[in-house]
Length: 195
Image (cartoon, rainbow, N blue to C red; front, side):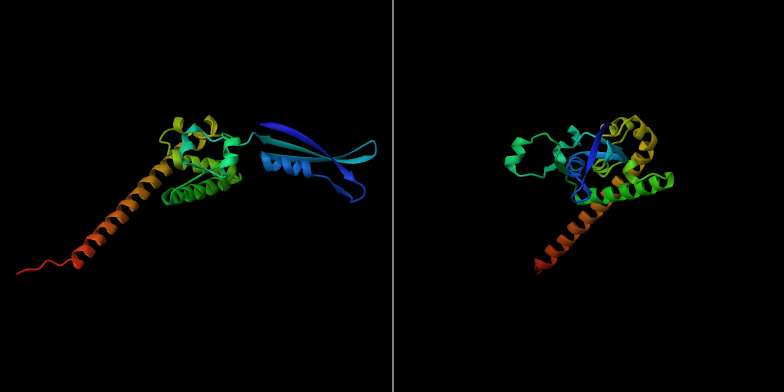
């Protein structure tokens, strides 16, 4: 966790604070919290903003293969390895992700915390891709340390296992319906002659 302080001066012509540097900084960093204070320095009003942040997200090696670049090929060469990638989920994984997000919201609400306090959206996507079966595997997700893994891990892993099994059963049944429908279509299109 890192801290940076911005001292914003009042522009007397417009009667507004110039917060362009602050806005640029918050767009480029993962901001955890902001605290503001107002004071006078040599009779000049100053608005001080203390930003607590962490370095930009760099995906773990576990999900590199499931990530899709979000920038063009020329920029890709220049910015390779910067972590500006999206995690691509299949339709089955999106369903699992949505159910994990609902679990996260309910769990956080019962504890009086905002949902990202438990796991961020990116962490949930990485969990879906990794599909951990142990606490040790869960700690391979970026930003999930021993505390989160031991506090929420067993419940999360059990839910993930249940959702994964349920999703694979649904996929198997859909595939079998498709196969049986295709075989019925083939048998009606090519009737055999008896006789």
